[in-house]
Image 1 (cartoon, rainbow, N blue to C red):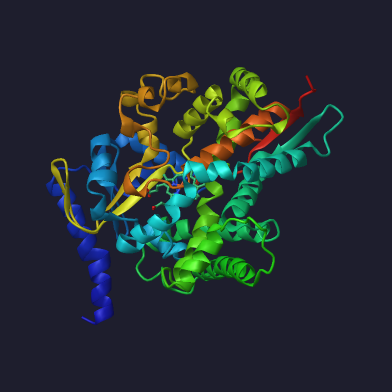
Image 2 (image 1 turned 135 degrees about the vertical axis):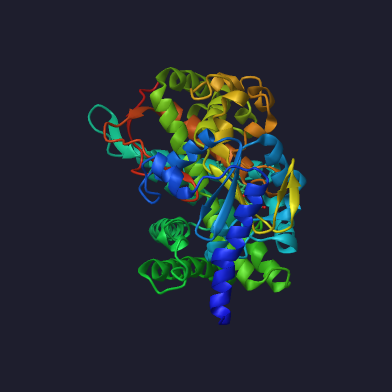
Length: 482
Ligand code: HEM
């Protein structure tokens, strides 16, 4: 057999068959991807269907496997197993094929493995600690004030305005994260960044879960999808290179200026502690994960508050006491109790990253099961977040008061709430994201009331994050001054 044909046979037939047999031998139930789609009468690439599929997984039990082309994936929603995957046996797992296929973020912290990842985590984590975010609170407030000022322009005669709030939140979060991380104003390349990421993530999803994932060879053919992926990858990398060049040639420095994350990366490049590829890939990584996720949290929280005007009013009363005239202080944030409960309920019902995946790189045990190398494992966070066993019979309902006594009392299992993941690869941006969400929503509640526009179509979808497929048009009404 020619070596190329042999490799195809190993990758597409031999290995997946061995993995399926291994699952079967251990009594793990299996559903073909096709079967799941058929039951739901869906095609995997239709708009909004990935959220429907994810939600449906909870009907298939705590552990099952599914096969799509060469990928055999084990779906695990049992907190005991989840703990073993993300925490106890974390060293036996790396990021899954979908994340590794995003070569624009290839060697960056989100997708790196082993020593390379550990080294980067040590570099970046201190930049996202509470004390750092506290020091830069003014930057976050500035971006929020700017965005809300924009919303106030061109109000109609009754002080109302219809606006796609998801788009506004994407702009706001990219703007503030750009200033926080890169010390740069990202408003001019903003359109290009959004367009490139949108198409890049959509095409990669198509490649990994559509027809190309089932037919050997399609992944490497010069198809229009593969061509577009290459173009977007190049464009995103060029945006990063441009940011780096601007920083390298910058002449003007403020007297007490702090080193930005970008300047830190350049210094470590000069000291040969990061490679050029790691620096570029991390720029793209931070551009991506630093804004879409928080915009998603803000959008779904706005949606829930629009559906529940009683909670909107209650949260407004609390915000009004604390942040009159945009004078919100760091110490006020922990007093926004109702808003904090609502943000947690929003993260439970609409987790911005509803799925966490891994590839097993070293055989290990999961309870009574043996997990072989190359098996992909995915944890549908939504299944845990909506489980009646952990949250009670009202798990499907919006009930922020379940968080009234803190996270640990909200459910009967600490691993039933995983919006930021868990273990060594837990999100490093969570303090930043929650701070930004509190600031933006507290200010917005002080200025406006809102309801969903009749144009809104409820169609959550997942690319890397959970987003409203057709945007989120709402009707904002400016509040009269007290
Ligand atoms: C509401 C907002 C956010 C949510 C829900 C969220 C969620 C997550 C989740 C679930 C993971 C773990 C993924 C895994 O285990 O495979 C993660 C990782 C990560 N997040 Fe976030 N994230 C948010 C905001 C941010 C922000 C603002 C940043 C900016 C710094 C960020 C940076 C990262 C990075 C760099 C990782 C990878 C960490 C590592 O592998 O060591 N995230 N995030």
